Image (cartoon, rainbow, N blue to C red; front, side, top):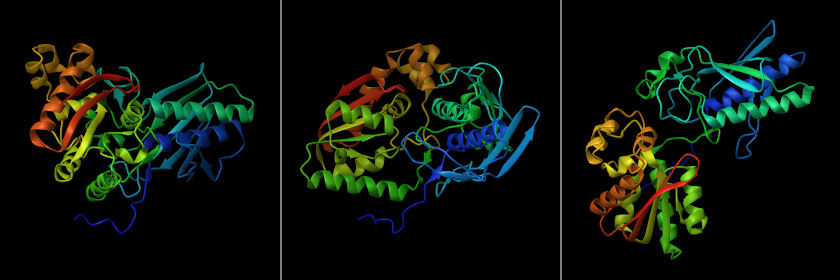
Length: 348
């Protein structure tokens, strides 16, 4: 029996959250008279953290603030990094620039266009939101250029997948919820086991394991499942399936993005990016599509050959059935894109 962790792991904040807080504090100085002693923001799910300012500077027509990233108990390579946002009231609307240590996108297949700073969509939305908030407070027009920098970011980025993905010059500004959930294999898998036990004890006929918040929301809505039917699988497909094989369920749905489901179809059961990758040369062979051998991401491969989504869903069902036969009477896989749309389904 897996031992339940005795202490709760401490959550942290994403680079996107830190950049948003820095942007807000810098705007308060740009349009006001002084930097605040600390700054509070509202995250996408309603949390309202406050941050002390670790760095401030001001010049002719600009102000900048640095926030030190605290990743909590997660072994994040950016823990302790200084996330700096410089703001200038120029242009039309909100624009973004990559400062020192923030990467620029050079390959297709990412959620940000080639040539743009690698600041992902949700952090962009968060920063745009604080521009509008502070502009209204000070009676200003929300026309701001935001330059995000991470000193030493280029060196830190060598420890990430950014160079392989074609993000050059540094790190990415990431986050979808604003919060870093501690990555503890033992604790996470233990929570999955408890979820399976609860579902079986309650007599649930249908449970689902999903790779992230978007896929969980879509799958739960698709089947009208109660909260306790949703197993917080994350990247731990293997940890979940091994336990279900010993504690079978009636029906199991696996939901996830195209990249992770493609990895399942290729035989991976640990879906974390540091431990499994999509084999694009294999995709090219399996789909008789040589152009896929040079793809940068699963999204780019899908854009080149849309049949990839169905192939991935079917392959994932086959792999799970082969490796964990008897775990569930009925199995289906749902593939979801970044916008929360279902792009493929398969049953077995």
